[in-house]
Structures are given as structure tokens and as C-alpha cells.
Image 1 (cartoon, rainbow, N blue to C red):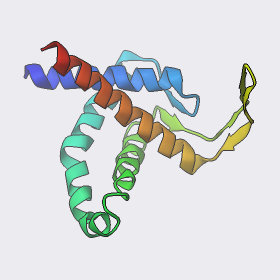
Image 2 (cartoon, helix red, strand yellow; image 1 turned 30 degrees about the horizontal axis):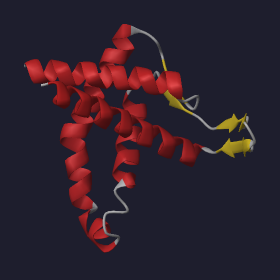
Image 3 (cartoon, helix red, strand yellow; image 1 turned 180 degrees about the vertical axis):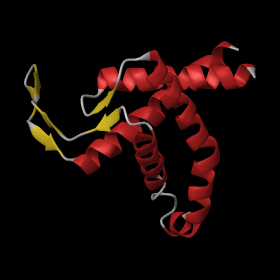
Image 4 (tube, rainbow, N blue to C red; image 1 turned 90 degrees about the vertical axis):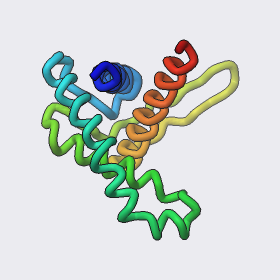
Length: 136
């Protein structure tokens, strides 16, 4: 029970952090919505994600696991369908300049917005789990 509550709270923190960091992902800042999204994301990662991985196993074997990002995209899409207060949208990146280094403005479409959101969610989740495991 303790590990389940810890995982739900980590998922809640990750969803909140991605909402703050990435403008293409938004979730309603309500504790009920965040808890619901965290629990559903936990269930999707523990139950649905292994089933999707099993179904896509031949493609992953052929591509040497390069197609594994599609599994994360599918779980994120299912999370958005189930929790109505989560939205992923395309946006215009305004660009960035720092001491001669220039990143030009770019339009991020919906597919790449899903891809970036999925990558951020998984990266933040892995980082926080790594930090917690180092402390124990």
C-alpha cells in the first residue's frame, strides 16, 4: 500500500511538473483532477502498457526497440481520452537567443506535441524514481 501511494504521488508530481514546463500540455490545477489523472496513469502504465508492448513486440524486435515510443504515445492518448481535463495541443515556439546561440521560432504540431509530452513525462518519472532510489 505504501509503494502504491508513493507511486501515485510521484505521478501527480510529474504531471504537475510537465504542466508547468511544457506549454503544449495542460491539466486543470485541481487536486481531484490531478489525483484522478495520477491514478489512471498508474493503471495505464501497470496494466495497459505491458499489453500494448506485447502486441507491438514483433515491430519492436524488427526495429531494435526504436518503436517503443509509440507505446508511450498510446498510453498518453488513452490518458487524455479518459481524463477530460487534460489537453495536449500544438503551439508556436517563439525562439531563443543566448550569447550568439540562436534557436529559431518553430511551430510544434500535434504529433510532435504528443511526442514531447510523452518524453517529458517518462523522463521526469524516471528521474524522480532514480532520485528516490538513491536516497534509500
